[in-house]
Length: 351
Image (cartoon, rainbow, N blue to C red; front, top):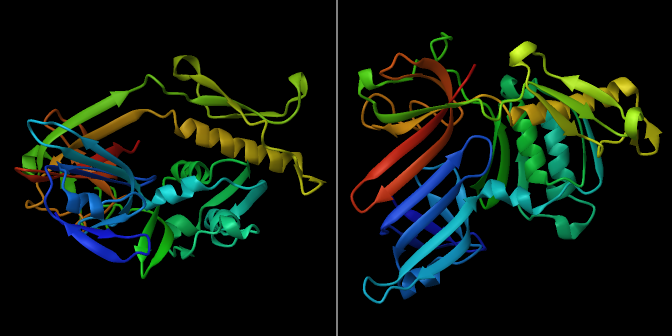
């Protein structure tokens, strides 16, 4: 795999094609990261600098160099370790400046957050140059709604929470020297539909070289009591989630930062409860049953990532123990060592 290096002006300055190991991770809903481990040379140290960008042909994401480490070894030679995150991490550099209420269309709401804090904020120093929003036309995105409120929260965390709660992805990519933000939803390629060609990974088809199945209920929560503004017994509360007996696993969501007063006007209690419910839904999303398949696929057998299936797609997964389920492609790891180049997807099961 070849990596193209871009400087801070987005100009190509070098190509790197030799390293002892490369790990490059893309994610459906959140930033990815990378690590390059290689022999340290003056040439590489000149090219691989903090704040430079990396482009990998196999990936739809670009990375930002954030860490440089040189490990000295008098016998084996010095090694260079370069790390960083994908362009989605640019959102982590901003907070939501002041109180912002989102009501109605979800995509419009996220565009509002980006306009006010990245694209055209009141404080010009907060602008990220060449950052644009590209609207999705996919009904899986355009039909989603939101009732939420944010005050001084991290922009990346806020957008990631909204997307995760609605099972959609987001990405920031470099296109024509612009940082382009997009929302997207994967296509359904499972047995539960008849529109797209099926994609199934299984040892029986010899396209899943090895796999790991993980399931954990340790952190599962099914009901949350969301408490908004007020003091003591006067706090406004609502309950999100439905479960009883042993399936009921309760938690508490502190949402006192959500105010019922917006721009000097008191909102209706029903509208405020919707905002509390949104916060509770996002909180519960972080405490669902964790069921994942991850493994090494053979890109030369049946299906090729980027051609037959894509990030966020829903595919069919089966292992040799009779476990079969619809699963979403939530992560792709590209791995290169001195001996091989491999692709490792992570599939998150859909209940």
